[in-house]
Length: 536
Image 1 (tube, rainbow, N blue to C red):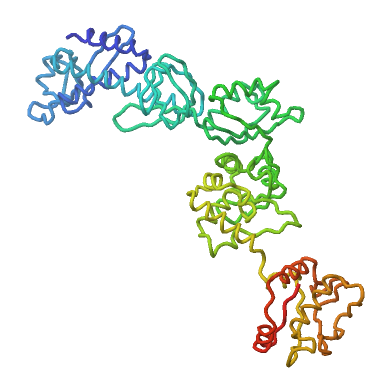
Image 2: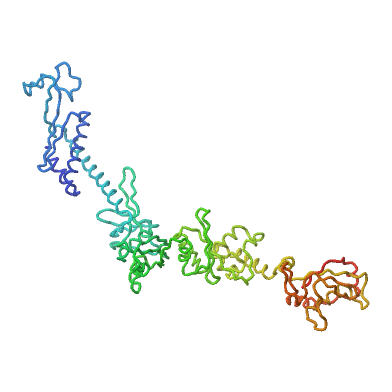
């Protein structure tokens, strides 16, 4: 084959690949040098002259003239006698340049050259694709769907294949061959010896940012900046925006008149709900905005943990809104702000409640942790949920959820213990001196004390209550020392309190019980040691 024919075939391949002239020249020289190395072992003694305009190539073999008996390398050296056959003027030390014809390489070498040329073009194409789409990472491309597979969908963009994996597709999307689809270039993978793989995505937060740039001129021009995007693809998203112009409302600009602009983005994302909020550099204010539609009453931060945590208190009727269905709202707020958010129900000052951690002796740490993650940090917050709702939201099985509700309900029905009630000032402690025997009317000292307490609780008007610490006559004439304050006297600074009407009701209920026989009462009074009596 002549060199002109070979170069002509190279040119046709290059034109089909839309390759420029300089690149073609480099490839042709590399191909011929590979042929020379294969035949002569080295290409240092050769020079290649390629003219892409005329489509011809010339190969020169340059050798140094040496003595007839001094030739060591026949590739780079030539005998003086052989050089004189070419031109009598050559002498030792001169350089002789002789031409080589492509046909001298043989048919097999020419076929190898063609294959090498095609391979070099493919390598250059791979490099071009890699460089082109590496620069397009984070940009929107529009491709035609040409194949839908089980785990991926293939798009064709400018004769380049793009892969849209299943996990980069919006749940619920359905693709048909031939349809046009918008996606963002996520990454370009390159393995040794294989074609570069361009991965597209429709679930990336960057895709939503680019859609806003397309639909909102203020975002495209940089007047409104999208600070951060948090998404649960196909479900819900939160977008924080900031305006660099005081006259431009960033939220209004993104939403548009009657929601025209944001609706275009929503349709592209398969009706994904989008909340647009204004960005704030204050983490507490940003967290409060991110938990919308809930309105937190207090936000406290803990920067010492990694990641940092935030404790958020919201009204009792807004806990479910702050957490959201399946925890979507609080999850997006955490992604947007960078804080792990713990939602707590705000407890009014006059409401009695029990911290959920106080049930640690009956509930496991894992169960308590799950309850706190859904905002049930107190007993009453848990009781606001049904067993089904508690099981679903806290990821508990039904039996465990019912057991948790039963434990907490039992604790609230039981109420505070005696010691706790004394500490809170609900009871008055009186020391009663027991008589050696029964009173003249047949009542024991304990019964006399009970009757005294009953008369005080009923508010007898005939008898004035004694002052604090004053001796009170007992049924048998002895005195009873009252340690607590008088019933009508206000509470003192030491925390003592007067007997409450609640305690009086309890005494009345105790009197409704079946009385014991006189003999049994007498035996009980004699056998029971004298103890301080707790009375309401």
